[in-house]
Image (cartoon, rainbow, N blue to C red; front, side):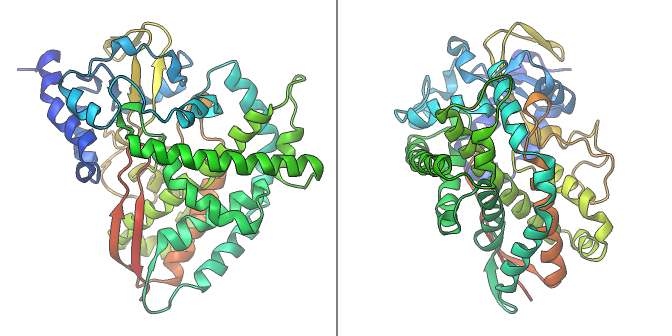
Amino acid sequence: MQMTKAALKTALVPPLAAFVASSNVRRRPYPLFGALRRLDPVHESAIGVWILSRHAEVSSVLRDARFGSDEDKADIERLNFGPFDRLFSKRGQRGGNSDHKEFVRKLGELMLFRDPPDHTRLRSLVTKAFTPRRIEVLQPRIEQIVAETLDAFPKDGAVDVMSTLAYPVPARVICELVGVPASDHGLIVSLAPDLAAGLDPGPMRTPDSMRRADEAYQTLQRYIGDLIDSRRREPQDDLLTALIDAESDGSSLTRDELIGTVGLLIMAGHETTANLVGNGLHAVLRDRDAFDRLRDDPSVGQTAVEELLRFDSPVQMTVRVALDDLAVGEQTIRKGSIVVPLIAAANRDPAVFADPNKLDLARSPNPHLSFSGGAHFCIGAPLARLEARIMLGELVRRFPAMRVRKAVRRKSFTIRGYSKLEVTTS
């Protein structure tokens, strides 16, 4: 007999609570995502947040302008913490955010969390500066930076790929693109983990993670503000100067918008790529046939990156708000409701991907959703793809005997990656 909606909601409370409460459970999220997809793909959780896990609904919502990204439009009265009350109170999130409001306020001002017409204007201005041509000419420089970095790897020993390659290389690339001096690249890398943890959905943020996100953002804000002042005095051939000069229909970026946009580009420009490289390397190291194919067949490079994005997505979920009463699947989601599309669950939907739990580096077509969709499709996707293809390809070719020595998962929700991925090079 098919379970009723009430029974499904009750049955799914324990595994969802475990997912929120335990980083150990989050290390292996795919069984839970699969259960949600099978049992209740458009699931109204016990606290009133809707969770989408099937590719059809996740893809549709990401592309539907009637689902906004501005969390201020959410109707908090629709939330009922009920059985989760003690858990969220302990996390400091009962009924809202922690006492550290600055990061949350600034987050809402970013292009990523704005709806039209504000989002349309901001994206149009950024697109004028962040052009495909500007990305294309970076390939030789990326290859040079990767080669220099790998030259310093021990030929016989252990090395943490995250701290020596996955973070520093894309951080250096985006910093050079924006115009951040080489002497300050280390500062940018050091701020990334705390800022990324602040991107978790509201109820999943802890007071400590928000305090650290606040402090990191304030440091970044001061730094970018000083950099903007410097570029206004002395323009350079870099992305920051292009953003300052960008204009569309008589509109340009305000100082606060410049700071937020540059901060978003810097952080998103290396955080996602770093975790794509870490997750992808770990995946092929666990599947030696895939490792050997990536090493021996250069033609598989592009499809391999798409498959690694699908197989273990660095962005596991996102948040949308229903701007009207809307039908999703067989359910009606009321205006103001918070919706969490599980990108990682959609990326393993067997209705779309044959044998979805298998790593197939030649998979094509591969309509994964790891870069979101619609108006909020990741503007930096071409750069992330290029960097990952070069880094992973060079790693496996240079170190064919590489093995995992120690892998430590991050505790965050939205971003999936490793805080440490130590490998032996021989």
